[in-house]
Length: 270
Image (cartoon, rainbow, N blue to C red; front, side):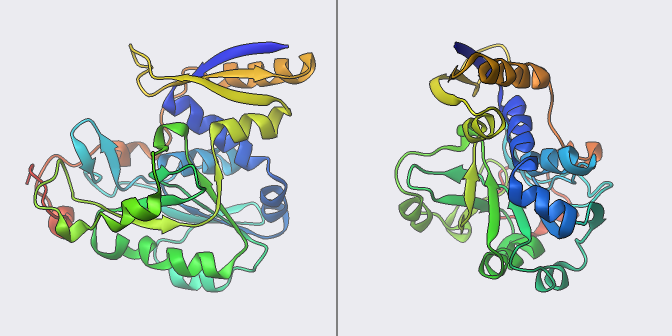
C-alpha cells in the first residue's frame, strides 16, 4: 500500500516528538533513569509527549530574523525527567549533567543538519549562555544524545565547512541577534525517521514547500503493508493542525532593545 501525506513544520515537530518518546532507550530512561531536555520548540514537544509539560523557549527564528524571548515568562528552558518526574534544572545545569549516567538520555535540538550526519545549533549570546556551556561536556559524558530536527533544517554542503565560515563576533549587521554555530553530535531524528520508527514503513520525501501556511512543508510517500501504512496515515492525521509547542509567554519575541538584549550583537532593531 502507498499513501502520500503532507506535514507542515509544526506538525512534523509533533511527529518527531512521538517518535523520540517511543524509542527503546527513551522508554528505558523514562522508567529507570534520566532524560535531559534542552529547550527548543521540538524538544518542548518531546517534553509534552513524555510528561505533558512544555518548555520555555529562548531564541527563535521568526520572519524578522533571529530573536530572543520578550520576557522569561513561566516554565523551564532546561529540564530533567527522573523516573518519570519532571524538574526544571536551569539553575543547576552543571550538577545535573555531572550526576547523569552513561545510559541516560539527552535531547538537544538543532538549527541545521547536513547529509553527512552533522548537526549544529545557533548561539545568539556569549558562549551560548549557560545551556551552551554544558553541551559539549554532556556529549562527552553520555551515550544517548538525540537530536530532533525537521527536514526544513537540512542544509546543503558540509556543516564542518559552514561552521568555519560563521562567527557571532564577525557579523556587522543582522536581522535580529547575530548568531554563530556550534556542532552537536548525536543521533539525528527527522520526521521521516519518526514515521518509520512508529509504523515500520518506508517513508520517502517527494517534495518540499507550499503556500497558505504550508511554506516549508514536506510531502512524503509512505509505503509498506496495509496495516502499517494505515497506522502511519492515522499518525499523520493525529497531528494535523497542531501548532507550536512552548510555554505561551515565552513564545512572544523581543521587539527591540531590552535588558536581555545586552549580550546580543549587530541587531538592526536595537
